[in-house]
Each structure stands twice: as C-alpha cells, then as structure tokens.
Picture 1 (tube, rainbow, N blue to C red):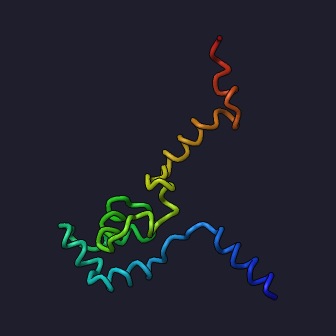
Picture 2: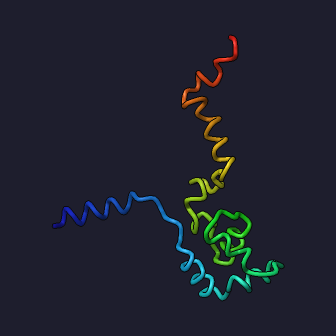
Picture 3: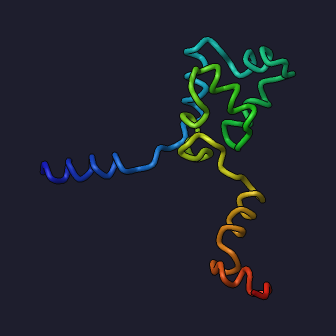
Length: 118
C-alpha cells in the first residue's frame, strides 16, 4: 500500500505545472480586490472583456496585467505559455516557423541545406 502512495506522489512531482483554471484566476483577482471590469478600467480599457480573453487564449498584454494585479509572473498562472526562463513560447504561425527552422526539412537538418553547394 505504501509503495502505491509513494509511486503516486513521485508521478505528481514530475507532472508539469498546469495553467490555472479561469475560475481560479477570477477568484484570485477577487481576493486581491479586483474584478476583470475594475482592472480593465484601471488600465484604461472600455471593458473587462479584453482582459477575459487571456483566460482562454494567449494574450500577452492582458496576461501581464492580470499577473501584476495578483503580484506574480504570468508564467505562474499560465506555465504552458512560457518557457522555463520566463520568456514567451512562440504561438500560432511563429511556433510552426520556429519548429521548421530548427528541424530542417522532414526533421533532417542536412536536407534543409541540400541545395547549397559546398
């Protein structure tokens, strides 16, 4: 029985951090004395709808504003959107392009430069 508990604990320790659930982000904002609407108004936005986009999709400016209101780095709230060093991961088309450049053609770096004569 103890072996099963230890095994489960070690698996949990190795699991990558997950993004906070949107409801958890909103709850944390409420505990800090903010709503999405009031935070949006504080930053000169017409509504909190702009900030709410960051709860579901990558929206760096809104992520930063929400994280600052909570006193943490955006990587703490959305670890899937950031590298370990805190820089943003490429999103959308840029992610595809950066992957293609690093792997070459069909994952073969030599094939990427086969047209170049040495």
